[in-house]
Length: 349
Image (tube, one colour):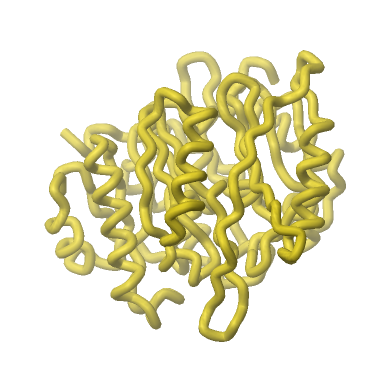
């Protein structure tokens, strides 16, 4: 549907949606540590003039963190119940037809029934009822399971995703690639789908979300997670992914300009399980990129320099996200753009 367009993440946003960890979430065992991380993210976003809608179990629970920010007026607290804090995967997706925007509310079932998601699956309805999402712009697509971290677009009709995630039998009943492609084309307006068949990080709960592996960027660029250590357990799989990326073509039949992000040095939890640290899980806005860092100065700096190749005019802000990966996610997972066309900007008047 040529008149329907799925918006790229680097287009202007009205606000960023986040959900504050609290005692009833899986963060309880490191609650103080992860809330410090959330405070750093909020400080970084608001310092760049970006509005944040912060979901919280209670207003009182969030007030202390918000009031400690240099720009607390850039945050609006919305009381809400939720299972988990990964707003990327249950927040609304933005499309537009002409000058009219829509907030698409897809189904979310806890990454293929791995975790409870009954409350997460109602968040967008709550945002509509609270007029954070303009009700007339809300659209119910909840008969199809689709997580925001599983898809990437260039804003011009191309979609990048992974076969392993979207064809997972616990998401949409084992629909075939062709069946899923038809749904994506009808509901997102995309007409060129790139299916990545390789890639996956140890400790990843998402069945290879694309935002851990490869990201689209302007000017025919794809950034991807590479591995140069032949002894690393990811070497073979990421090498196959890189080879497949070289075969991808844009709608004009041209190859993509591939830019390789480094793979962070291995990070393990207390039980010796490797955690899915990746620099591909950055948040991009229209003016800045917020890059997860892992206290690995050389790798962190290399990731920043690499991102400058694809986004030369963006400011790059590093945020220590070692706490986030303890629950197997990172900065992009914890944030979601709210498009100005369906976001109620009167919240910040």
